[in-house]
Length: 297
Image (cartoon, rainbow, N blue to C red; front, side, top):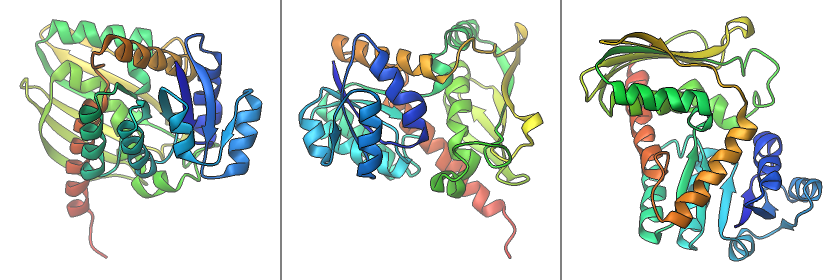
């Protein structure tokens, strides 16, 4: 499968490009970026072509991987889907419901495959645990902590404008929801949302299967306190999300393989654009509550 890469930032350089270039089932056919010089540099590193025109790249590939800010991703994803290209997208799908719905609608109308890279869902140990707990059921409550030190440590993503604007809710909130939703079911309502220190937010969710969950999300945690975890409590007792044995690069390779499988099998993947739209809707509801909870100056 010929695939093009849209984006040249740190995530594209660290994960997307090396994973796609090394994947036996893919031909990394080209790179496009908003900075032509960066596109040329990244393309040269992986022995492929830099494109100045995104439509020219779309005409030469079967699929695209997108490593761009969510608002840019959403518009280009619609464009690519309408051109008949399969989509390997990143989370969040978008930061508005309108943009997210436009992507999901374009995917459905064009009949293309889509996979959104929720990292944890493509790491074998956590994904097996998620499937096991979803089958077990009987959960009473859950607690998710997703604490990053992006703004307090030495992170290549610290200067990301969209992260500075949207914060942990939109950056790591999708990861937490990607674990909780398949286990506890859809969210009936965001019962509460409160801001914490820095960009930290705390949410209480009411799930359709009757369980509740609490989420603490941050990109401003002290480096020594950073980390992620999920605890479930229910009829079967207490269980914790296991650590992954590998990082995002091999996980992204599995996401690419999942896209290929969905395209060849003409079947949706559980982490497709429709699922990512639902995540967007939940986060947008939480954002509205948070705006009302913050004190006025």
